Length: 125
Image 1: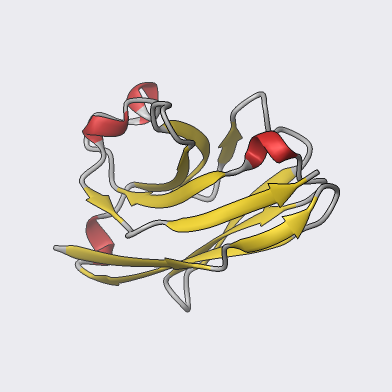
Image 2 (image 1 turned 180 degrees about the horizontal axis):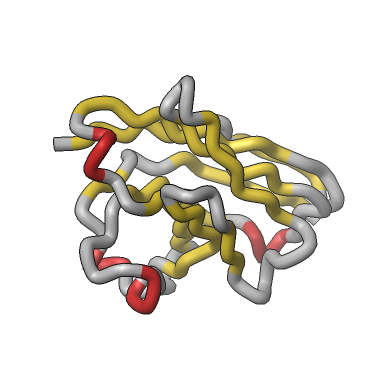
């Protein structure tokens, strides 16, 4: 089992920045990748960014160039640095860990094994 605690959300004005953190504990050696998803009211949960166990990042087109995913293996923590935030970035952001189907299926939310509780990000215009 893996436990995830995601923090760092808040209210920010458009153009501002936030950094989300996801602290992992438990059987973390089994994790092949970690990612950030977001879900706005009435919408599906969409992949924002993912980082493999080897450190390779991938981003959705909507955040590419504005968001950066990184990991600190010593702290078992993954970060999402969000810059140039837009009102359309408003959502609950969820950390996810381990997708046993591999990189071709990172966009499939139901294939990830572990989830954080979510943290609200609100961007005002």
